[in-house]
Length: 343
View 1 (cartoon, rainbow, N blue to C red):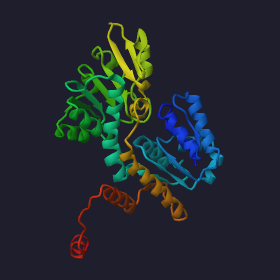
View 2 (view 1 turned 180 degrees about the vertical axis):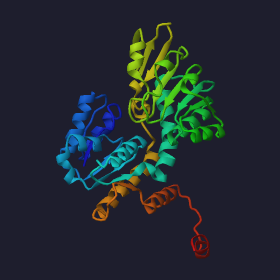
View 3 (view 1 turned 90 degrees about the vertical axis):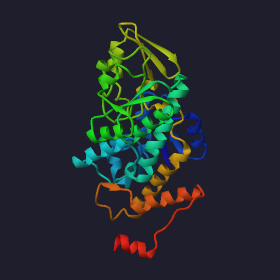
View 4 (view 1 turned 30 degrees about the vertical axis):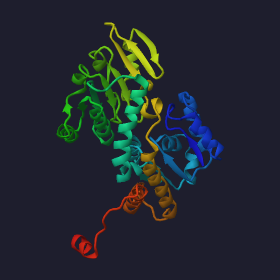
């Protein structure tokens, strides 16, 4: 088994060392340069891998673009992020995806729990330990109201913040309103927000126009997979001064003496400035990944589609195991009830 990081700041060196001690081949360290990050991926893929467990799509992307000679060795893979699935969908539509990928993020045991509760908690763990600021009484702007955005907004509310959601999807925006949050365009929210968290998977969600109206002391971070949601290049172009305030907190002084702050270089704030998702939520995601990989191997000669949903029985099996772990139980349908519901 060969392992690398999913972005330059996601690796925890002590965990990487422990995995290496356990006999796994690890190519990753915290704070690697973009060049080193890509080199790590190349080292992993050079081993003629059969199953790809991806997180964001960089492994699959490099296989197809730089190392196509390794494609014949691949049975298939799994992708656990929203961003990664967007990349896979684009590849499949262009008919460039060369092997089947299981869309792990679409499994209920993944997005309903990992994205919502895992992201919700780990984002605020990262923000709180990095800034040491109180959240209660502050205005939190959550960009994006998918499952990750729902979790971030929910936890912000629980910490005592007033929450504003920015969205491009009118249905998700309505959900936010009916969940008790305000909605408005980002450039309006930028005028009043104290904390900004991007979770859209899209590029340049917070731009120069927003930076120019932010309050003095505004704090920004990203919980989408790639460091493109906050226009960091634009921010550095605007800033008259750049100064590290604390570890993982970079301050930017703008032309009217306002300071705005960026956490973890605009990369994933949860693993880069915290410990990432709690193990008690990741166990379900990893179980889905492992069982999906097993499914690919067992059905490799039967799979003709390139994008594959997690089989429902796999999803249900993981849920039942989690309930048993909690030492809880639920009802089961009688034969009569099954006949009534399903005929």
